[in-house]
Image (tube, rainbow, N blue to C red; front, top):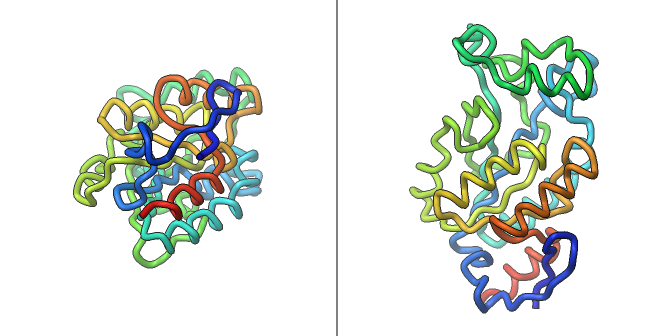
Length: 229
């Protein structure tokens, strides 16, 4: 049996039963979202800081190493905006978070430099191994928009995705909705995502568990993969 979390409560499922499509390592890819310097740097100039995400870097690296041994593909997704600014602040419509998020966290002095192509802020903090894939060009909240992630997954023959990274209540949640709407089986390791705060993180994971897919610990996911014939 595999232990999952459903709206904060624990449930046991049979990984070979109705959730077998979620837990087939041969048809799964891990999609790691926005684990780059633009969110995780400790530099005061960090353009869009997500400091809670720093605490999962080592865990994500360890999870990815074990997943690679099982043949699970790793895809690293990063936000990348054209240096001209036309994709966001100097285009016809800037990202809504630029107006709304500061109402909670206060002014973000370096926000204009967030994810600019060619800048140091797009460097991954997590390990990228030979054989991993990289998807750049994420310009809004979902890893699927307007990137070629869906095309890549279909070319790889992937039918299930595991989402880790930041932020649980923002980019991970949006990506989970898009993945589910596109027909992918979605899983989220609760120990390898972080939200704006613990309350929003829990809320996002509850929504995912009720409507989009499986929420479980990364060790439970690895164990389910290892038991697959």
